[in-house]
Image (cartoon, each protein chain N blue to C red):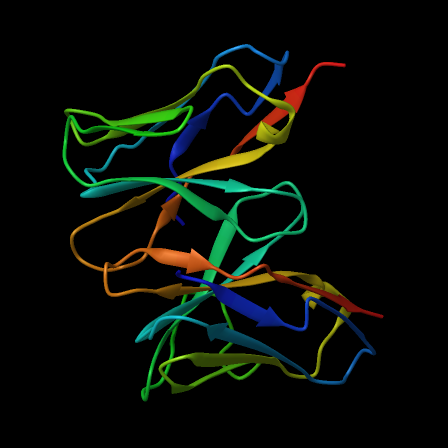
Length: 111
Length: 114
C-alpha cells in the first residue's frame, strides 16, 4: 500500500545533539502526525498537525506541517538517552480516518 | 487520558489453535478501532478497521475468516487469529480513535506460533 517517504532511516546521535527528520508524500494530507515507538511497545503520539504551515512544539520536540501539505519535519533539540527509539510520521487525508505511515527513523545514541 | 490496553501482552500457541486478543479503550469511548500488524524493523500495516456494532472492513490481502474481529461495545474490540500458523507470528497492535479523530495505540501483543 501507499507509504510516506521518511528519512533518514536511522541516525546515530550523541547526547545533547539536535536531531531532524522529515517525511514527504506525493499526495496531499489534511493531518500530519508524529509517533514514537519503543521496543515491544505501541506507538505513542508526540505531535499532531492540522493546518498547512503550522509549527507546533511539545517540550524539546518541534514539528511543522509543510505549506504544500505534502511534507512534514520533526526536530528534537538537545537529545537525551530516553529519546532513542523509532519515530514514525503518519498522514491522514480528508476522506477517511486511516493513517498512511512512514517507514520510521531509528534513533541510536553513540556510545 | 486516551489510554488503550491490550491483553495479552504476549502469547505462545501451537499451530492450528486459535488466539483471541483484546483491545480496550480505558477512559474514552471509541466508535472506531484499528488492528495493525508489525513485522520486525518495519512500519505498521493496517489489517482492518473495526466500527462498533458493524462488520469490520478488511484491507486487501487480509483474510477475514482467519482474522475475526468483533467490536461489540464502545470500549472493546477483539481480534481472533483462527487456526494459527507460524507465519502468523507477529506483533499485533490495536488503536482506538477518540472524538478528536486521533488514534491512540495499545502496547501491542506479541504472538508466537510454534
